[in-house]
Amino acid sequence: MQAHPMQAKSMQERLIVGLDVPTVTEAEQAVRELDGVVSFYKIGYQLAFAGGLDFARELASGGTKIFLDMKLLDIDHTVAKGVENIVKMGMTMLTIHAYPKAMQAAVEAARGSELCLLAVSVLTSMDEQDMIDAGYEYDPHTLVLRRSEQALHAGMGGIVCSAAEAEAVRRLVGPDMAVVTPGIRPVGSDHGDQKRVMTPAQAIRSGSSHLVVGRPIVAAADRRAAAEAILDEMRSA
Image 1 (tube, one colour):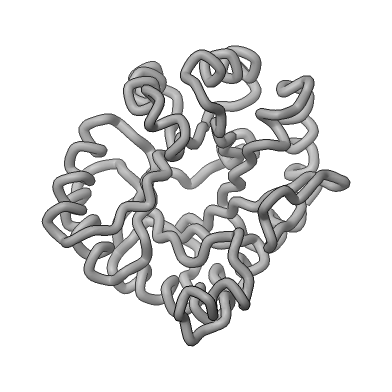
Image 2: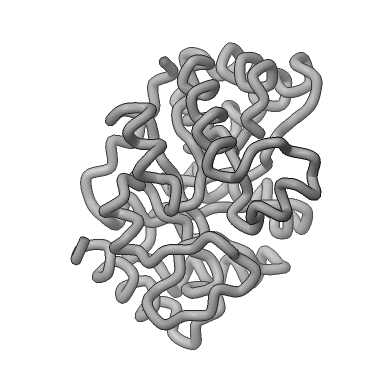
């Protein structure tokens, strides 16, 4: 199995804040406001295509952990070459769509590095009807477990799934793999476009190793207080 460097000890190490903002300037401001409270950030498409890859490299060089959410999927050679360069960027986590050949290529390319490869199982914005519309014969829960088993066999470092599936995934993959759950919403908050959501404490109790929280922190009037409140919820689990 691919080693991953994140046997996280504190809740602070287990909270990943999604920098889902349109510009690097706004991302820099969020990181400044969260300094000392948050040490792990996710950078996805929106920021990546606005200069966020250089920003990710800069943060990583200063010791901040970065989860690069690129959800790679392509022919084996292309995935492998992408992963090789992402290793050089010093990233902590990287997402790959959980297709067996893509995962195998990524694992081979990352071998010997500290990069934790995460298999994206089923997006948390999808429900059963969405799966049918996309041509899948499985419901979300069944497909998450199938892909988690394939990720385990491929030697991936972890799984991305909704917290609703975290408990079943944890039972399947054992204690060592990362189980990273987006779609986390604090008690009383708006679900936005997420359909399969859970509170921070519920997610921790369900076996999540890391929680990804974007809007509830980044869109908050007081980001620091919002992050502290979520950490408190996580500690109460």
